[in-house]
Amino acid sequence: MVDDVIDKMLSGQVPALSRLISKIERGDGDVGHIMEKIRPHTGQAHTIGITGPPGSGKSTLTDKLTSHLREQGKTVGILAVDPSSPFSGGALLGDRLRMRQHYLDPAVFIRSMATRGALGGLSAVSKRVLKLLDAAQKDVVILETVGVGQTEFGVMDAADSVVVVLVPEAGDAIQTLKAGLLEVADVFVVNKSDRTGAKRMATDLEMSVMMGPQDDQWTVPVMQTQAHRNIGVAELWDKLVDHRKVLEDSGRLEDSRRNHRREEFFEVIQETVNQQFRTLVSQDADLGGLIARVENGELDSYHAAQEVLSDSVLLQGWFTSLQGE
Image 1 (spheres, rainbow, N blue to C red):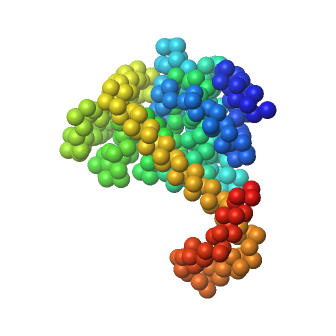
Image 2: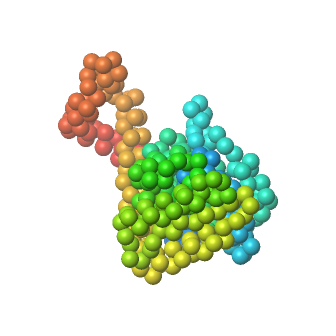
Image 3: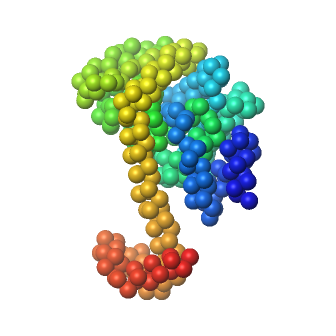
């Protein structure tokens, strides 16, 4: 049954893509099968990460960039990663409220997802959805992150090109870069560049790039845009095209994707072990008692973890139960 849905998605049917994304969000048992089936069909899309602090205009920039891409006849997939609701775990913001003009365009697919509390603001589920959009034959896949700014590094493990969007009101550019964004950005964008302080921020960023680690093949450009007026958007896309070409010509694109796949492997291992261990805790009385002692403050978490990991009988029983499943 799921194979039929995958085939329909690969042929361009939007409802099938939506169904597969929902399966991945729920963590259905056939997620592994889905990812293996679509694997040969991935790797063609140019995946762009757009990140930066709240209020920097990331959604507007994504909207205008999508319009520019559609004028060029390119298909677009957009994954907007929003803050998680502390109650439901779902996304707080909705995709249809962000980019209404693209909602009826069959060549644009938009989906909002929650961060699910992931470090760096990007969950393993989000990365799987990006692969689905790639397999669905989208020319460009845009990942717009939650916008927590200084801690938003997860996008590096998912996107080919990363755009860091800042605004003059963000404060001292040097302070911003101390948080590590200099290592994140492939392109800097000073958005709302008609505001006071924009030129100074752009100059500070350019100087910081020059003083930072040098790359003999790519110097991080600093663009100035006014996304709400559609100013500088076409030029931004031209820079992203240039960056993609550098990645391809130098072999870095495949190196980067190889790193992404390796990190994803470790993430899946951690995710699976965590889920299975939580199940084991609910079934094993001795382990449950150990957890209770940790909860009551009778035992340090680190010591308890070492005790569990050194218990060969417990671990062997755990592995046996995993094999049974």
